[in-house]
Structures are given as structure tokens and as C-alpha cells.
Length: 123
Ligand SMILES: [Mg+2]
Image (cartoon, rainbow, N blue to C red; front, side, top):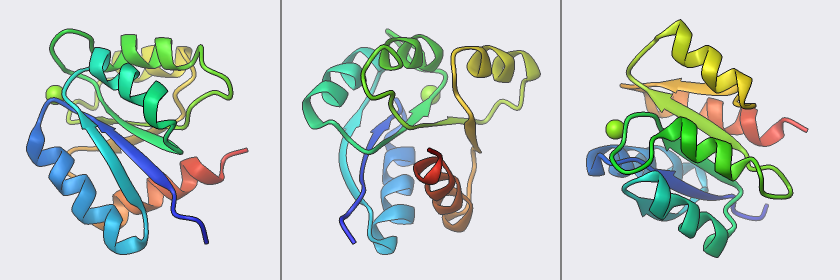
């Protein structure tokens, strides 16, 4: 199986590390970490990852704005939105721009892997 390549966009370095620790033992390759959406978009265009884990609250450019830009790319990116906030308004804004997969913070490695696999297998 080809390794799925993952980009982490999150201003918290410990989340990047936690995502890496959750996914790499399962055979995923974490190809980069961006600390805000603006850098994340640059890295997305450079690395063309199979999936992005995307934080909501970040400086410079937040996760919703970032996803809106990423969804202009072809083919559309696979995104798992990660947030500590279980806010229905936030989820609605996210769904409105096309995000279907959400992971809570904190997460267990199993929970995150399952979300990532669900998102990757979505046609
Ligand atoms: Mg954040």
C-alpha cells in the first residue's frame, strides 16, 4: 500500500506531534506542519498531500478561511477539521464550505486514525 501523505495545519506544535504519533505507526507519512492557514496553503500546493488535518483557531488565517481556499484546488482536498470547540455554528460554517469530517481535541490515536481513514475513503 502506498503511504498516504498528511499535512498538519495547526498553530499548536503539540498537536502536530500528537497527530504524527497517532498516524505514523499506522503507516501514514506526515509530510509537514504549518502554523497558520497562509503557510498551510503554500505547503499544500508544494507537497500535494493526500489529506490535511486542519485546526480552526489560528493566527493570520483561520481554518474556515483556509479550507475555503483549499477547496478551490482540483481535485478538492480531503480535510479533517480539528477543534476543541463543539460549536454548532462553527460546524455549520464548516459544512457549508464542504467540510464533512471533524475530529475533536483532545483525540485518541484510534479516533483520529478512524476519521482520517473515513475521510480518505470518501469518494
Ligand atoms: Mg489553534
